[in-house]
Length: 352
Figure (cartoon, one colour):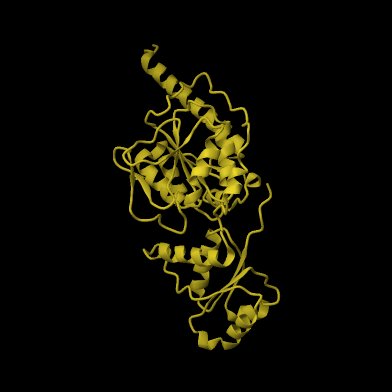
């Protein structure tokens, strides 16, 4: 499906470090950076720059009266001032600054990656779903509700519900794994999302409950407003704090929290979305031996998020939602065959 035009942001700052950090943060949120420069570069390029929003940060505003007068006198320009100096990305204050930037950008540009209304979700509901794939004969069907030994994280943002629904609708029941679905979305829309995505799928969406394990045959919906993690026994727990960074939930943090428990048995698929959520955690999961897959760009409403994960070099498979479902079934079948071979080799005495 064609992507909607991405809002463009122009950045003007007399501080080189501030320009760099603003550029990185704006790009991370999936926005186009149409211009980056100091006041001198602005004067040389002002007639050629077209932007939906101008972000202006000056260490010494008194030194740039002509620039400020021109920007403020133009009623057609949307302006954003007063963000303050961005801390280093590794600093404990950076997530708060990034969240504040995200909020300010949304005030100016509207929702950047959340679904705006229920009707967009309702439009995904169809009287009939596609025919699911068959469960391979080599795979022993897992009983729904038993604790899972393997988890697949489904991370998504803009355009994610349609992609994840297509993926889940195609899967056969009985796969020996649990899904954990981290979707950037308004908390109020989750009941509708759960109903629409679970209508034709073999895997119902369930609410996270403290003290419960991840279970086969279910899609655990990650809460938007509070951080979820697993304790040493693999049981669901919540932190009182909001998710770190500008997103709720943070796909990066979901991946890290679950991988801490499941390690090499924690895998992730990144679907359509803006920003680069998931790109930080992907290399860390890859180091465990996890599989990192992404949705193919032309099938995304916005490919910024899967593209950012691909840029880490950690991606093992790229496909449409249907192809991702097919690959997962093949992957489970191959794992089952390999496990049976190992068991057979252990039971068969060595030949002289």
